[in-house]
Image (cartoon, rainbow, N blue to C red):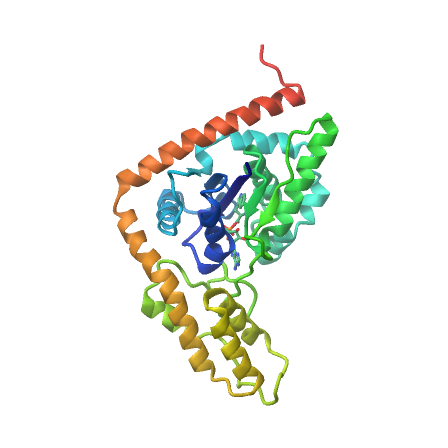
Length: 329
Ligand code: TYM
């Protein structure tokens, strides 16, 4: 049986990128595999969240996961810091992670470019902690978005290195996963890059129908094509990418034909995108409100998840210590 693991940082609310990149795939798989889903609150500390806000963020994230369809009866849902064994595994793996390769990680280079005032060691070793999350449960499939591809590559590298140094066949190959398709990158509505928490360009699972429409209608576009099959500018490509994710293939082809024959009206296209987003988000939003008001349920899910995750983590740590020669007196 496959072991599947996925996680999301506890920074801010879940947006459509998180949903289509990771959560939806995981939800689809949870009944057919041994599944772990966790909230990466240790990872969120790299950006120094306000201590008084951290717990609330984790609680919100949990309510949002559950509302999006995670089933605690089949998947183990836990908070990373409830399983401190992951910090030990990260430390052990870091002994075979080279500073040079960590410095070359795209996400690290990106962070130092954007936040030169906060280049902490946690950012540098971020991929090692992530590898520890994954290898802790010896996961073989990891539903993630396109931006996490390199981290997964590094996880496999660390696993292979560990196996080869110690002459064991212990850690498996952890593969990024998106239900048989390419990994998804949900673009932002501001005409650039990806939808992200720190980019402030997201459509969130808690957004009201009105907010969704407003954000989509304001999305960057251009004056429209002036000749058939004109090469698309980035913002228009983004609109089509979003449409390919939230709308039906027929709707997508309809608007693509309109673009290619220079008859497209971006206002109509945006209205359609907003309507399709609303039909995905509004039922989830209603469940978020319901689940958030049920503290007892959330507490039970977390307690149960923590104990199951710790069981799996303890077994791995015991094996890894033994393999590396750490013995108890
Ligand atoms: P995070 O919290 O940035 O994002 C969580 C998940 O959402 C995906 N995602 C996207 N997918 C498509 N389009 C987008 N615009 C988009 N934005 C975010 C991410 O690819 C990710 O799958 N390092 C991870 C958290 C983590 C983790 C792990 C994930 C820690 N340990 C172990 C998997 C396994 C992160 O920061 O994700």
